[in-house]
Image (cartoon, rainbow, N blue to C red; front, side, top):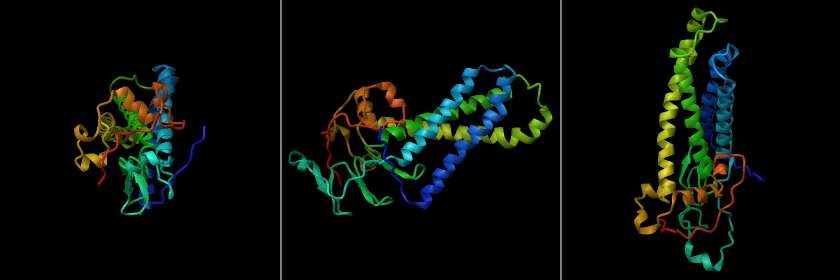
Length: 265
């Protein structure tokens, strides 16, 4: 497995991704310390819940790392264009390089990206043909981890039995307001935001329309063709094996050359 790393030099992007990493670190460190492990040690919850939480956390940070460092589909300076596909290429009026139709020039990164969806400052990278599946994974695992955090915070307040080996008054004073309520608030914001973003991305993939094309008011009824959801996700993820759609630590290979080209403005 060969994974190419791609880094964007953008201080604002570094700040945004640091905020995302800080939220992940906050919940990954404090929730197990204050809720999961103490209740597990006293036999209130099974070991499977602890393992599932750490798996969700690991997959979330792996998807974040891969989405932020994977090449989104940057075009080479001198691409080799097959003669049979020349009609599907055009000249970029910003960098004066040839690119496939449906590509877009990212002013933030300074280069053209194949089938660019948008530039996301929260991963400090463009979302394009080669890393769209990783961005979709990141949205999904962020939803899972945020929902897991919310459920654990709720159970801490209303369901779990009091911890016998803990001073409840001291816990309430030191941790409940400062840590668990902040964690619940962040989990609620992240879950709502990621759910909305995941739905938007998924509908775009199923309709074969990028965010940039939606903003430009492209119509799939005119330019595209209807596809099954299995084929649409398989094409984005680069494999027909559905279990691999959920694994971020792998490389992506296009299934076949796509001929759903659209006129790009």
